[in-house]
Image (cartoon, rainbow, N blue to C red):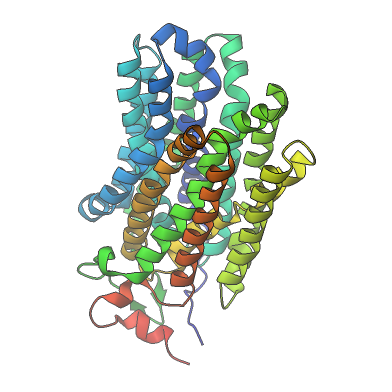
Length: 418
């Protein structure tokens, strides 16, 4: 049998609970709140096609860089200090870029903002591992749901906020959402000083110490999760970038095309609720991956073969395919034993995964322009599917990232008792 951590009282973890959920809610604000405002921001700051394309690529590129850097920061500073640094970077970047007067400075401050959120992406899974080892599935469901809500909320309210005041106020308002994260974490850190907790779950009286060093570059689990996340995120970024232009090119009006993107985004919410509660019960998580992959394929084929008929149905299928992203986030904890291992796996997989996915929207457009049609570009999505499934096979087994390094620790021995 597999031994699991004993249930702990929720008292003493309320700050962490609120802090994790609020952080997840704010993580996508900087990414998706700006594009709807470019009609106002562009003429004032001097955005052109190149700088607009560069802005679209910043998020995955910066997430990739700081995904690889953050595990080292966690090792040096600890999870909470990295989280607080991430929030401060995000808040300062958003506030200052709301008052700048040129596109270059706006882009540089966007890098600072996204660096904060990139660090936040990485620390969330190990924070769940540290504070809620007995509720990993439930907490993952909660914070992935907040990610989905934030992805929908920012573009939904950015334009009304700008219409009520101006685009600068709208951008600055999302910084306040990030700043609120500091309150529950301040409470939690005070609680932790009063009642210190171990970084790793207690199992039968033994504490699993983090390994001296984990090298994810030599871990099949880490590579598998990175490959899986790259294939998944590439499809998602292509949809966020190209779905409205593609549908408009097929004859749909601009408003309908935009509504289809909103439909795609909001469908991340139900799968975010379902996946972390269902997948941990499966002996082979690849079963869930195959179901959501079938949704992706149906959506891709429907939009390519019949983009103006039953459009919403094809978008619904593709939107449900986003369950693969929720699986990737869940695996950061299911394929690690320790808080430190979760942090290393999270940083490595998100770093390489987002880095690999960053090029997909750009190539999608380049291939479309080079061939004069959409067929070859949609063929790229088939390649993304194959990449994602390759990673899924690599992470399907029960192996953990710590298993690639030295002798197993006491916790791993206990977990193997049958």
